[in-house]
Length: 339
Image 1 (cartoon, rainbow, N blue to C red):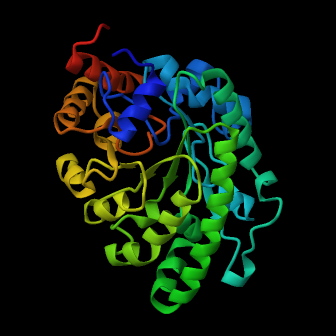
Image 2: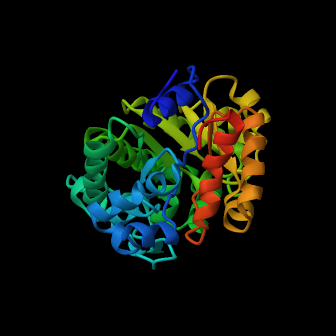
């Protein structure tokens, strides 16, 4: 069976037969060495669709990592909804600097939501990638999932307080952020995205209790996924083991986990409802390690039965290119593929 990267990725995501486990990345792919090599640098690549598309496919071009993924941050929707964003530097991602609302009543999804901020940039970059690579590479687009977007809108600390004292307001806020997600996600699919990657750091059990995830977040993620005709890979950071089963029950085709979560346990908890993506440590191994350590950890993930081999989270901008190449090399060595 000879597959191209897109065919291989989709088969792996759906649990179908494949020639080998794809080395990929479903989260942030911008690294400084890659930016310099393809002449598409932050912060300009956050604002220019051609540069965004060029950087989004850079690790495929430079290392063979089977992915085309944009954008490179989790501030696109909050900016479109009035939030202040520090666009960052070549080695630092954009971050929210001003939360635009203090009450649920202040949030309305505007009619021109898809024309605001950098949303048109991401949509155009997606179209460019689809036109150039749509037959050969999975086009993956990430965005802030509902509760992470809610935290960006009012401040994550405030959101944690609301969970205790204003729980009904949290429910109403999540309904509105889910509405924004659905509008944006459908536009991304129309623009050519194959796979949508809601990223939800605020749902990490390090921050949000598993009970709150089950009661408040899981239903809105399920609503999001059911409302959009596309493939979904849900990423949640940190010690996500207590919520893996719930993540799988959102209807996501696959779930992306960090190295803190055991792959065999995750596969058992997901019970075939979702495939497992991960989980070579981005901080300890890819950023601070060397190619041999990366290969060793990657092969352990393959031994454990990971469905798509990938960094555990978004890549640190300072990650060495040689360590990214080592993920691809690990797969070639594991499956005895030609170099």
